[in-house]
Amino acid sequence: MYRPTAFQEDNVDKLVSFMRTNSFATLVSIVDGIPCASHIPLVVTLQEDVVKLIGHLAKQNPQWQAFDAAESLAIFTGAHAYISPSLYEKHESVPTWNYIAVHAYGIPKIITFNDTPETMDNMIDEMIDTYEADYKLHWHGLSDGFREGMMNGIIGFEMTVTRLEGKYKLSQNRSQTEQQNVSKALLQSPDAATRAVGAEMKQNLETNN
Image 1: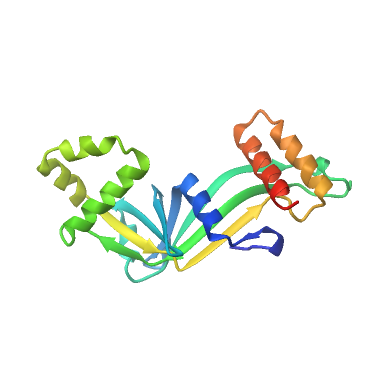
Image 2: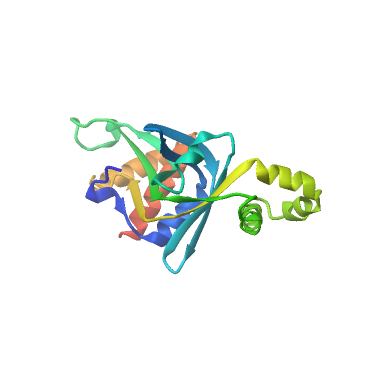
């Protein structure tokens, strides 16, 4: 990811927090020389400075064939907003876009029910705990045949993140006055996503001042 110095963010705790908040990610792999992407929820864990991603694909999805051998990329994005040049002090300015994105790279390790049923069970439980803890009792109350059929229809994976890149493009390359002007304008927008970017800018200004 292209990351000019002003927009680089490398604080792992901050990036993990963002990833968890925006955990419906885009997972990209190369299958037979062709880029392949899936949009899936991921569980993000951090233990002793090691970030791991847990998720699964439908067995019929060919993307999992790239796992175990080649690097994949998980892309996490949040709110984004158009920035009008009218918010800048100089007349000769151009439009841009503000956003936050995190890229996580690693080699996904395949988890299947046939090979490692206990690991698959743990993976499903962890996803349920993350997204709907109240569903766990329901899940374990289903018949063994139904649950095993569901788990045989997916390919689970765990990806240890070997490279983590964060980009917080929040007008840090502009003067403080311009950053404040942009933030205030975004916070007044009727669009919730635009207001969210304004709030991120406001927080970033307060943190760095």
